[in-house]
Length: 315
Image (tube, rainbow, N blue to C red):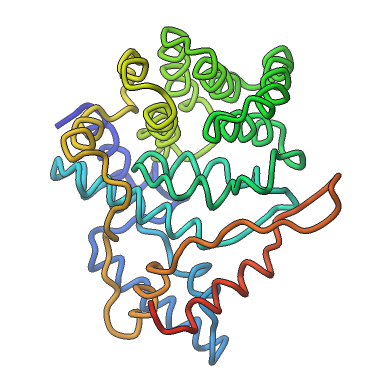
């Protein structure tokens, strides 16, 4: 068992450490709790739409990590990230931001090579981001410039990233931006250093300890490099030795040719079957509304599009 697994399970199985997050004994416990939620949904609304299910049915991410680490099952670990990502991606939100709002979701999704996410969350026709939290804008614009190999965009994104690094920002945020800048410079030594820093500083951010054991964001950044760099350059990036980076997962992904979609880790039975169909829905493509100076994600239209897809009965 990898060190990451031992550390995670020690925390996950400690009620004191997990009092502020959703944890379950096993899949049966998870399903039973979701049936309780299903009952409450119907007590409040006789005809809930799919967005209600996505909002209220709990994501089994932490349980999936626990099962994968207990069994040294890297396929299950990969599938857990996929299930987690797809569930979150279908819960459409904006926070008043433009497409930069999807940055963390893209990072999580790329940890399991779910690359379809980038072109749905960051459609090329939307151009660069300019409305949102500074890290999201700067990192998203670097990523879009790299992904679409757009030098004109990079000429705007790179100076903004340099300015970001010169400001008083968190070390974790700076490491993420510096890593993407290193990729743009084909500086594999710097990319190696900053990827390790992403892992290191992720343990210092304000979130429950159980989420700090496995740095999905670092895995996502590593896989992004594989897609945008020549293979010889990518192989020069050294896998982080940090405890929250899972070497076994990387080995499994490599051996299985980096599958770009996983399987869902839960099959919802009986009356919860609707969740199986919801999760199979295609990813909604990001749509923006508003003026050119301040656009936001068009949450209502994207939800309507998702509901319309579900109504076709194909899923």
